[in-house]
Image (cartoon, rainbow, N blue to C red; front, side, top):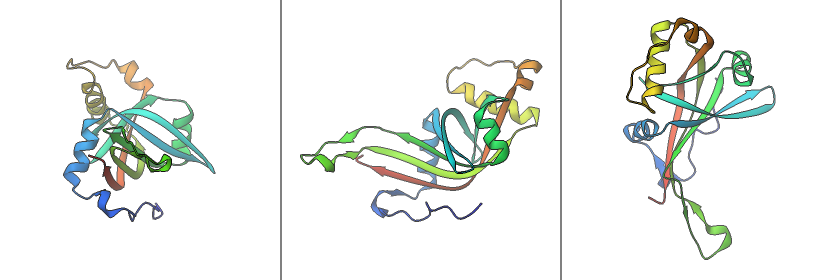
Length: 160
């Protein structure tokens, strides 16, 4: 992967450098925005995800726009944000976002190992239910699980 332009944060006073805090932000959410590139056209999609051992997982149908793009180009950028809100100002252009945000880049890989696939699905489902589920073989075959191996990650916070 080429060097990403998001390597140096302009506002050092807002940068989160503690990886434990970055991981806590990732673990606290259910939804991330995933940016893909198809030739010279960006594609952005929200996905439910799970985080485990420094990797992100999401699931999808076996076909569709994001799957076709990932087959051609597995470079991705992701964004996870919490504590949304704004800081009001008396000046029109001085309003600011209140947030903690994680942005990273990585490589998306299709998970083929059934054990890893089931573990990832269990982690995703755990965000929504305390129940445990069985995954019939036909459902597993129809479901794509994608792991994002994180190459670079940054955290930023403001207004908290």
